[in-house]
Image 1 (cartoon, rainbow, N blue to C red):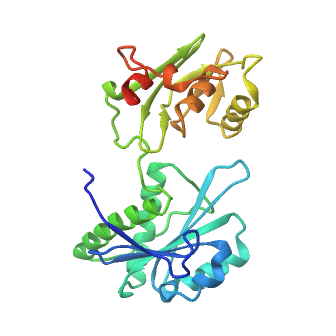
Image 2: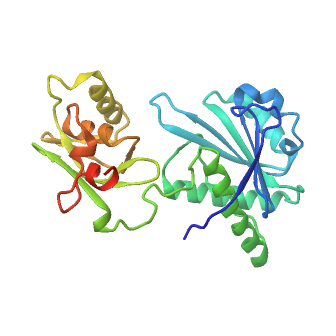
Length: 280
């Protein structure tokens, strides 16, 4: 169960889009975020040299979200090497303790755990993914590090990268929370989340667009086809995994293959529209 929390963010350069240091004031963990364009400014922050884990975020050629998860006794030395050799990333987050208490084994354990959880969640593709070895640590230290991970999870998500957040919000979708969109051969189910409309795996979309679909709808569907999210069986397109849309209309348009008002197209099991339930 989630609970209210307060995050403190410091902007050392004064820019809201530049370097940020974020922390839960009552916890040991702190994060340093910077866009790659502010690489030289981030280098001046003391925390850049700390022992910990780091995350490089970017996109692949198809527009899929990508991440590289690493660790270092001096994170900046590793990141400098990635700055020279890796092209895909645009943003970085370093996570460590406020007093630089981690040792190599701590960092290796957190790297291993972060990779495992991120792979389970499946929101990001991995750049040069490899399962890191699990170091030998005491049971009590493992408990401390797992608690630290929960803070890292919150801070990384709050900085705009929900790497460890289940898109469904829970492992089990309750039937009463579902909305439905259908037409012609299409039949889709979705849930409404804090991030948008999550169309569920197994939903189907009409095979062809209408003549008035427009470039917006055609473009959205093509991207999902290119990414392998939509797969044709000759009669419909099928979602082979959950897919998040930032608006009800984007989701409905993709499913119907035409321009669509998602606030009216999406209905609950009783036939009430999203508009009736959420806006009136």
